[in-house]
Image 1 (cartoon, rainbow, N blue to C red):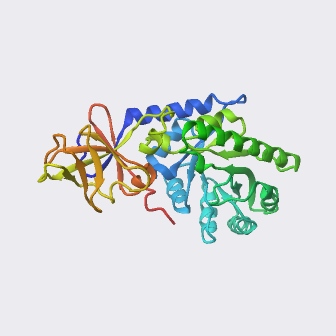
Image 2 (image 1 turned 180 degrees about the horizontal axis):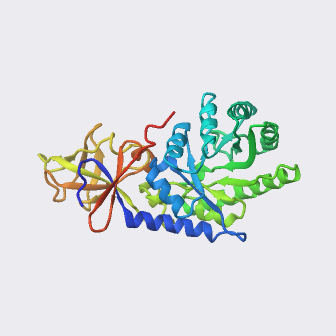
Amino acid sequence: MKPPITPALVVRRAAMEANLAAMQAACTGAGDAGGVRLRAHGKMHKCSTLGRLQIEMGAVGLCCQTVGEAETYVHAGIGDVLVTAPVPPWGWARLAALAGRTRVGAVMDSAAQAQQGGTAALAAGVVLDAYVDVDPGMGRAGVAPADVAALAASIVAQQGLRYAGIQAYCGHHQHLPPAQRAAAHADWTVRLAALVAQLQAAGLAPEQVTGGGTGTAALDLAAGVYTEIQPGSYAVMDVEYGDLGDLPFAPALFVAASVVSANHASHVTIDAGHKALHPNGPASRVVLPPGSAYRPAGDEHGAIIPPNGASEGDLVWLQQGHVDPTIALHDALFVADEDGNLERWPIDARRASL
């Protein structure tokens, strides 16, 4: 297969769909009461077409990281979105406007956010689903477990909000080595179960306990506390998740680049640098030619060392180190069938950061 331009993001459709099916089957088969809900995280792919496919295959909706992502997905026909990061003051009116069209939820980690969200929803004549964002130890956002009940009560007091549950996302666990990840998850599960019991005793039982991710998905499903999980990278994977060695998902996303200069015996230069392969995370990995390594060589270029037969005009295939920020650098996914046919899927939420 040959994409029409380079650098380009190319998705193996069969591998992606197998990943989607595997995660959905794991969620459907978990628990004792009809499975655990899958709310796939749209911040990873930023692509409405892929999001709709996830819902067609059984996901209840999408997570979003920004108000802009939520707007993009709702306008594209996604029927249930949850903003999983704190919403700035200007964002509540925009979310309330969306809630007039579909189901919209947001996490909150302060009484001020509950007041802002409730006021905006009441003014728009809608109701927003509200979740208390619990800090499991990341220190990024969320309230301490001891403060969850008070914030839940603040949400209940707002006429424009519906207390829908709690979010507990352990991002700091996702890429730990298997044994360390399991131990950390077990410790957190005990504390999370205790928190849910406390809320139930206070008359604030969470309808949903949402969170989790690709790295902890199997542990989240087995724990029996989460009612909904939010994995994202499982759909196409990356070097960082693949190197954990214990996840049942195949690489499905690759970056195709062209050799644009071959004047050195030690390496060839390709048209994929920092603007095509985000440097966050581990180094991107060369898939073809085998045995070569990738080294960034500026914004627009990279070096393939050694060339291993690659010459000017050839395609080089790489797997990105970290999928989320790499996808955010591109305008489209080129979804490839095994016969080489390509379909272009716009990354339409790419610029939806506001």
